[in-house]
Amino acid sequence: MKKLMIALVAMLPIFVFAAGAKVPLDKANYDLADKASLQNGAKLFMNYCLACHTTQYQRYGRVAKDLGIPDQLMMENLVFTDSKIGDLMFNSMDKKEAGQWFGAPPPDLTLVARVRGADWIYTYLRSFYVDESRPFGVNNTVFPEVGMPHVLEELQGVSTPTFEVSTDAKGIEHKKVVALTSDESGEMSSDEYDAAVLDLVNFLVYAGEPNKLERQGMGYWVLAFLFVLFIVSYLLKKEYWRDIH
Image 1 (tube, one colour):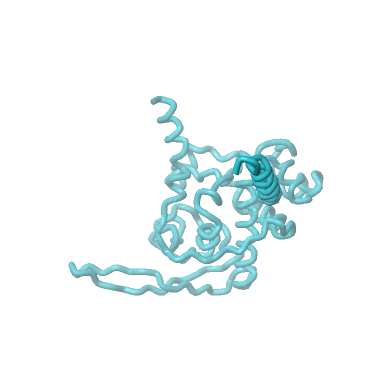
Image 2: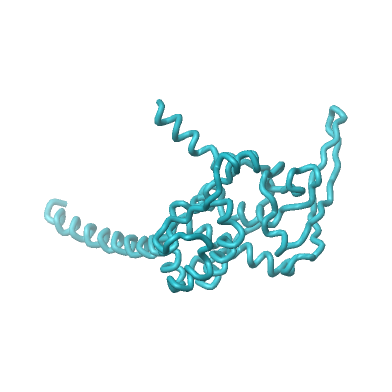
């Protein structure tokens, strides 16, 4: 029972991150075979995400190898701590202090794409809007009352919401965000930002299952083998029972 309680407590950050509103999600057409996309996604993750979120089940060396990045280039451009190429991808943020700053420690993102799905992440990172009532001045349509700042704001710019107001049977008004309008003050256009977020999503999908393409490729061979084995087994069965029937 004690071990079960420890496991549940350890998983709380994932459950917190998984919480959110049920809104239509945009399709994330990621491509794990696109090395350029994965490399750009890794760059964005290292520059904007790793300071708060870890990918503690990934190693810098594994990422460099899989993404076709030379180790020296990886260390010089994508590793901003004293970590070595073979180290796991941790950060130096104190979890207790992070919990005080954000309301809960930022969760590890190694498996976030498998927990929430690529579409959720893709929509979430494009759904921040100005909300002065929030501690960091932003809210999110996918994850209402989000405790995370919009770390990609310098790329996207500032978005303002358009609300739809409705009144329920008890006369209580409810506000729903129906549209977001960017002020285009970011370093990227809307299309460029969407492409950058897709690259980041691509990297997170890879991080959750680095051998996914290899597994899928092997699966086709296994199915082909089973198909051939079925034919051979069927012919063998017919030959074996030929004199009996």
